[in-house]
View (cartoon, rainbow, N blue to C red):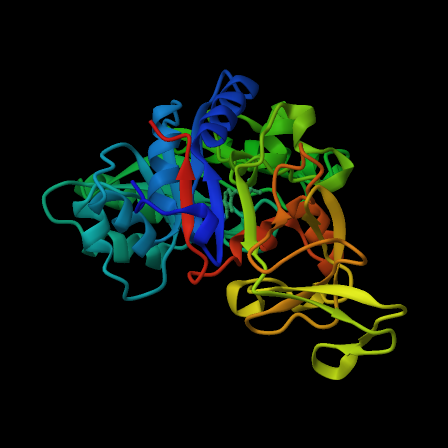
Length: 381
Ligand SMILES: *Cc1c(COP(=O)(O)O)cnc(C)c1O
């Protein structure tokens, strides 16, 4: 699957455990046993690599693959995925006819989207999921506009150009399972489905849940769940409820090798702006990764790493290509391994630790990892 590499010689790499992906997909299926499962692989599978992840997810029984944008969905088909694929974010003028010809399910939130989809139909009808805005105010028809969307869809069902394959929405606050917003969204969703049925239409697959809903809100499962982040073994709840409580296994480990190690005297400043000063004679390790690789610059002066089993800290600003670790009085040499984050089972920091250091969420830590960092796959079949 990937080029043979000698891990002891790489600058840096993200190791992605496809066994963990399969394990997590199976755990999510068990969690929402009465629903179908859509594995969300948008944004290059949250930085893990879309095609290998989609393949592993199918092996573990994912009924659907979910992609945000059209290029992602088409790339899945080109890679040979023949199963159900749903793509939900298109803009006017995009080549919907390609998606329809490729048998990709599309979403519509407004009558003009129904028109665009219908115009892209050749010999096979387009499968459309109608989106209701249940309170997040992102995509979806607001409840006042919902009947107009249904009428537009119904007109094209009658021409034979579209089939209504589903009714769906998205949760705004499932990372706070106790928030009353969840209950409100379920109620709004249920009424929207009732309206569809009142037109004499079968709503098809009803779907609402992301990872938070899949893991913590069974009343959001309906016919299909769409977990993303949990597939990668990360918890939508961050440190509050770690993924291991749901039996999830983080799939990605980011590690590098020091480009240089040196001893500096007390009082020297480190990296741009010299924002950190060595309080005593210190050993510094130069990590050949920076914000150009996707490390968050906000994690300067504080992000954790692991070196030879010890927790160490990034000092000074994270640069475009490099950053500096305070190795204190450790014995270390250029070429030694530094683990930035991983599953956390051997004491290494996790993506959540990095998220805390950068004031963000684990989603952003893994998803932003750039194309300059090679991915190496283990645990493949
Ligand atoms: C990203 C996304 C998901 C998955 O969300 P997670 O919180 O990562 O589980 C599901 N549905 C839609 C529409 C999304 O945009």
